[in-house]
Image (cartoon, rainbow, N blue to C red; front, side, top):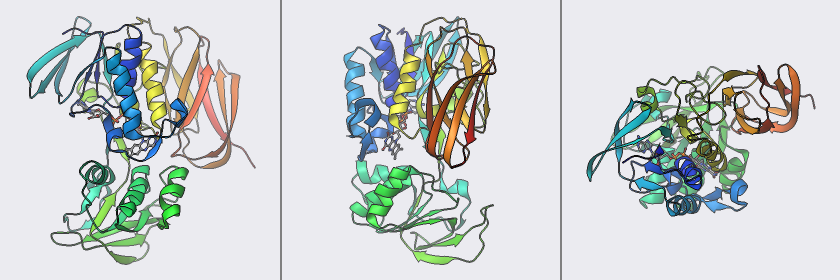
Length: 409
Ligand SMILES: Cc1cc2nc3c(=O)[nH]c(=O)nc-3n(C[C@H](O)[C@H](O)[C@H](O)COP(=O)(O)OP(=O)(O)OC[C@H]3O[C@@H](n4cnc5c(N)ncnc54)[C@H](O)[C@@H]3O)c2cc1C
């Protein structure tokens, strides 16, 4: 079948593109490998989703349900339980071959969107010594077992890493009757949102130990204990630490964009985000007609921004822009998305997403167009885990620079 756009991934990002594209009368096909649309939100039964977009505190499944109903109601089509096996390009058209229990199928469109989300780093990527017994899980797998399968994977847990999923699972396991001995973070600052530290740890009396990591796992068939030890700035243990008996080690040590399909197309990844470089409409810099949205582009902390970026892409599909790209210069930012700006596009408000490399009580963001300051925004409590969003109207320019400076209190 021929469509105006093929979207790979049916989470909030893919749904956001489908809604915007359908609103504009475009024929959209969503390809999703799981049986149901909704992405990671299906297993996030806690609330806190949609505060910015809907002004309501929704659970993950509620947020996803709204978008699924809207997208399908507007005529977007979905192929669920379908796995992409190849993507080829012929005469300006992308051909996507999929396999499913219904058999093989090929569909084409002039525009292709990657909305494949992200995946978790595993225990193997953080070099823990000791045995490899059952009972070592990533936080997302633990969440899947508890929230979707109704299984409690352990009675006494240790959580390694203070990313949001680990914090949320500390609370979830406690509510389900397990004991959480503590959350251990090797860095000097928590990796998750402040609100999650308060609501998931402080409210339940779960200890958070900074600059401490799990150095060894004990157990034969099943985890029996872990050794935790304080570490220096280079993450080297500074003492033998202590042994904590437990039957579950939950690893929450970061997320990486899911980008195998993109790299198989020859797209290159950026160091800061581990996603591709895009312009302000989320179109890939090195491939016309290919967009990357959501966590596949850069890991977001709020789903509302995932949908916002996805809808920006959906509003651009098929626009046929003759792009004139300039690279956005930055100072004191760990990354910025978009990395490039199309100066041929009509001047309108664009949204920039970025992270600070370190915490600051007060900061000031400045935008310079052709060397002239065009916007200044004061920020308080800047922290690397909390994404900074900046809206700015940029007229056609030859150079664009965005800087972050710490302000003395
Ligand atoms: C545990 C957890 C808690 C969170 N809590 C909050 C919160 O409280 N508030 C908030 O606003 N945000 C929260 N977030 C963030 C938000 O949920 C995510 O940012 C958002 O779901 C990302 O959307 P996405 O569509 O990019 O990715 P996903 O939701 O991961 O969707 C990607 C989809 O693509 C599919 N896919 C991947 N590869 C392929 C392929 N090759 N072929 C076909 N399909 C494919 C996947 O199966 C999946 O359905 C949380 C996230 C997590 C993980």
